[in-house]
Amino acid sequence: MPPLRAACAGLVWVVAMAAGTASAQDPPKEGEAAPAQPAATTEAPTQTPAVDAPDKEPAPPPAKKETAAPAPSPAPSAATTPQPAPAKSKVPEGEEAEGFHFGSYGRVRAATDLRGGGPQWGNVVRNGSRLDLGPYAELELRNTQYTDSGMRVRVVSTLALAGDPFHYTGKFETQLAMRNLFVDVRGLGLPGLTVWAGSRMYRGDDIYLLDFWPLDNLNTVGGGAILDATDSTRVQLHVGTNRLVNGKFQYQEKALPNPIGVGGTSISTLDRPRTIVSGKITQFFPNNRAPKGFKIALHGEGHVLPSGIAESSTTIVQPSTYLPADNGFVIGAQATPYGFGDRDGFAHLFVRYARGIAAYGDLSVPFGLNPERRASGANELLIATGGNVQLDRFALMWGAYARRFEDASEAKYSFYRFWEGILSLRPIAYTSKHTGVALEGSYQFRNANVLDDWGKHQIPQVLRLSAMPFITPHGWGSYRRPMLFALYTASMRNEATRALYAEDDPRSQRKVEHYFGIGAEWWFNSSSYP
Image (cartoon, rainbow, N blue to C red):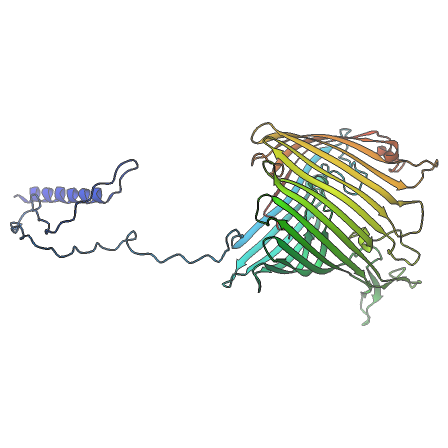
């Protein structure tokens, strides 16, 4: 055979053999059956000569029938080599994944009073409608790890930003607060035990429409423990301190010459942090894993404030003021059925009673003190409810409370002895999978034991009506976020409400306050709840 012809024949033979081998190894296409495998035989396979193979010896004659030796095993490959079993994950089922996590809550809006000015706050109670709240954001950074012994370790930091953005002030400044900065460890000794230390927003369930935590909402630097004793019982204990540096109630500094004669220095002449101890027990029926059920909770707090000396001036020696030690307590309860309706259905009922410095709140300076400059006579009674029910494309959210407050003074008639309350309803209709319209109506009042300049007892009252078309990219749900919305609110105020403003304030003359704006709200991956 000529060399060129032999080379061409060899090339054809190599290509043919390669194509045949590839066809035999290719997997069947989708919808095709796998090729049939040859049946096992006890005879040795008959070899056949290659086509046009030069210089090949004739094939040997067929072997006699006898039991053939086992066929050699195929060469190992990724598909046939046994792989080691994957390592068992240290992350318990249902727990957060290991690693870095980012979470956030926020709201932002642009609004006008429809008179050429900016938006105006239209509530007369302590916790009014959240619809016209200003811009606010929380940025949470969280790292979660699991140890070989099964403990979960989290490091949580949450930075809060409040106030109008740069675009509305022209200043590179904002209000910053470190709302969370703590470490917690779950599974130390007991599988259901979590211990934590640091600064924390430590709170329970809220009333969303009023941006209000009626039972427990503490802000301290301290620590605590949360024990899920069973699937049905949770026990929480906490101790911490907080301190207000504004005014002369808990902290004060005094400027003094530097003892070495260069410049000046300052010393703290008043430093009395408030210590707060709290405990809470929650019982779930049937358990905390059930999608539908009922829970009840009992909550208590103790507040202690040491004595101190307040200077009348930070630079000039004047008679100082003695601030006596003070204390207070909180007791309360909660009942909540949940899991009804199509999604996110629940109904909270709260009852709370506070006395002494606890009646003013953990971040408030007591006012209306008794002759001993103590808050021992102050008291607060609160009854509140909030909830949500959704059926198909319709939903109803609500929030309400009635609050009786009395300061510690002995005055019979005082602006700080009052009843106040609010009822807010928000029906929602979804016009498509991602759009809807919400209407909100609220009524609020404040009835104080005072007479006006003409000897009349008047009750400030506000009726607010709102319309809010919105977009929810994640579909139906009262709590689906993020949400984009447009909002119009009309606040109708009576004469007693208008009298709360300064005489030269334009709002003292307006019977109706308008609010129109567009905004957004979002939340995801937040760990602000225990």
